[in-house]
Image (tube, rainbow, N blue to C red):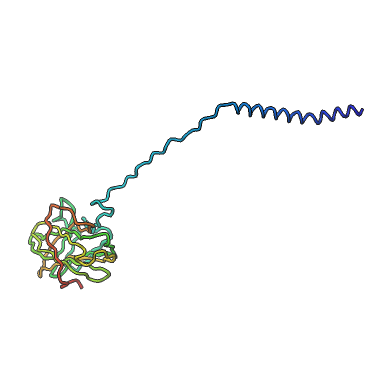
Length: 231
């Protein structure tokens, strides 16, 4: 009886041990098979080719474009002002070029077309450039002037305008005493002729460098004493 019970106990103990031995043997066989396999070559990702970033070229070879005030309409936040009898910002003729509009000003002596902006930083710009036309009569003398920090600056006089012909006016901002200033509020084109007259203006802008050649003649502009300026 005692011997029979010992045999049963041995079978109970050896059964789980046998299962453990079998699992261990299988594990060793798998590891041995894997050890003998040739190594798998590493996969190398293809090199990344950099793509060149394309930037639009700046106008006039500069990183900052010219600041347009008027080109067929007021632009960049500039607003119409003035104390002339008539100021028409959508005048159909004459215009510079084959199409578009210009500014027609009918002004008594010392009246002007004034163009206003809350505040403009002029530090990037060196010149003011505009085109003017004396209309049928011609001979007008004009004066350009700026307001900076709420105060009238030095005016610049323009040579008499030719009749029925567009001419360019290009004046360094230093002539007005405003070069590098960040508080420009307005500028005007004033009739200095001493009699009522009509004149035209077109393509007004601020440039960072001396403007390029154009078909139109560039007329003389000279700093003058601050007489008959705007109130």
